[in-house]
Image (cartoon, rainbow, N blue to C red):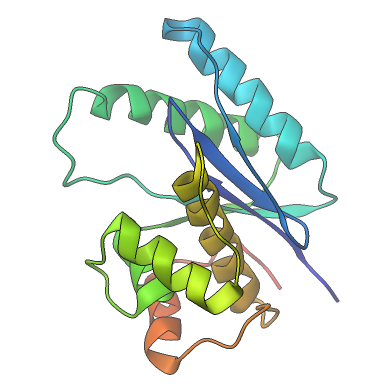
Length: 173
């Protein structure tokens, strides 16, 4: 049975969303404060609701980040997680290092290295505004599909090992 996986790379300025065979988008809003959180929640949940019985894969928090946006991105992450929970949509979190390892074979790969590796494997050029966010969401979606044995591409064993670090318990096959 084919599963539907949605990948979410949450960001206040450009949230990447990936679902279906090849749909990706970067969503944003010019609003600030609580209105920004509400609008981003609504936009993300509208995208998620276009998929029947989705499994959602979210990039986890980057605890090594040192910027003034850490609390705000935490608020967005919390708002999205509550919205998914309220709708009984199962989700898992993928650490940024696991996403990078899945894409490149190395957990400490830079954003550019991740995008380059995925472009080389898929033939898709991830450019323009929000390109790296769309790419990250696509990787998260592919990781979810790989977990269910439905990856669209063949991945080296080293890359697939990144799936072993994920707590998939909220996804029942």
